[in-house]
Image 1 (cartoon, one colour):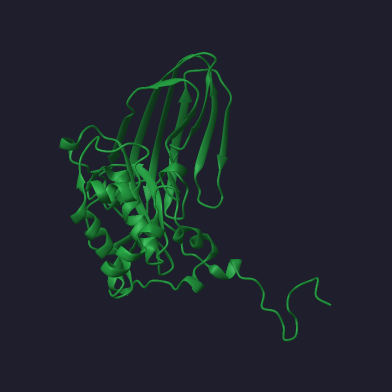
Image 2 (cartoon, rainbow, N blue to C red):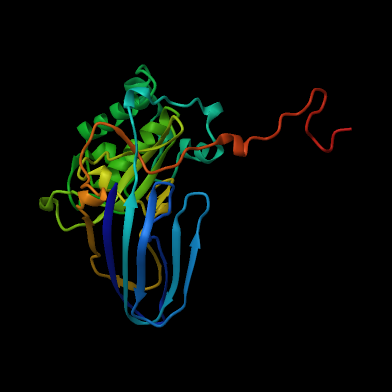
Length: 310
């Protein structure tokens, strides 16, 4: 088991008459990601509204902040009980057999224009053996085409632009890999967490963008930027692309300071807690998808299933 201690500090200066925020920095509760303890504090005495999206477990904090300084501090202790699998035994799922909550992740989105990459993806990956290995090939191809370069892109950079410029940060690597997976009908979604294990030479600890791909009976973790240790990723949010899981969406005149982030793994082997490490196994903190829960009942012979049929 992996135990992670997290701390996120956000600091803003807000101009009159105030500003609205939607934060997505609280740890998601998943079948294999358990929150042991957490705390969130704001320095302003304002109301907080929290909503959990039942479809993806994202937890959104809504705040209307007053003019002046807004400081938010979130801390959590989280246990990760990963599902490990042999990559050679993980298959792709035909579109007709995908569970409903995976279908939306084969379509193009704002930053992942998979419809513009169909020809490229088909030429590069169309003839590869279907399965986890094909997704690994897509990840390796992205890493061969794009160089990690700090401050080389902005919040509007898309997968197509990253491919043309051959530079980017973790967000850009994730968008390009997602777009290429979708272009060959593999459901892939954007995930946000923290960059545990990243080389200090890349800068101060930061948020991390990575990819979750639906294969077999669950979603598996991929780190196309190759800058961190996936076994140490704690999931905050998932979505079609970065637009869905920004750590802070702001409405108003606000000056932001750089976030302060800490992600520390607990090393206590006597209690079964080990440090995250790079491994060859496929990793997931997702649960098994049971598409039978979503399946419509089969109509009996002679019955179209349409209540308006006479």
